[in-house]
Image 1 (cartoon, helix red, strand yellow):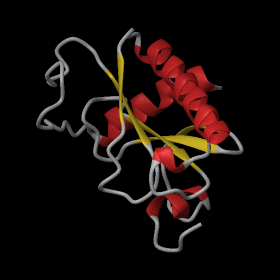
Image 2 (image 1 turned 180 degrees about the horizontal axis):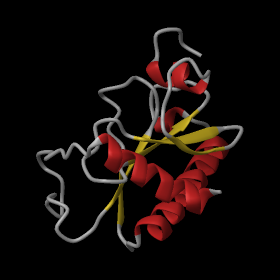
Image 3 (image 1 turned 90 degrees about the vertical axis):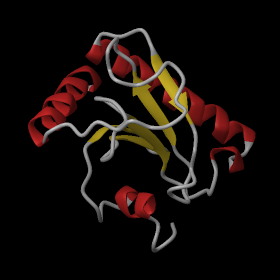
Length: 136
């Protein structure tokens, strides 16, 4: 754990979040600045700067966790397409972004310049509840 890392602080329960899933190694939360409705971030509890800093076994476990969360999103939001991307420049803790894509969501097929949507608190709660229903 790194004291000033936001994801380490979330992992320790110091910062509230909309956590849709977790196990002993990873957790998935709704992004607070989503590109699309249902934008989720999958984060390892163990601090690493980049996803690929993990050893091979941990990386495989990470990608299996990501795949599990994609399944939740596909079922909860009734979409086949969930885009995955890893950027990591904005937070120095490994994480994978998952964007459930729905026709007319306002994003181009390939993300060049982000066009962010800001759901209302009510929409965020509805999205959270939809996903939690599938997870639980």
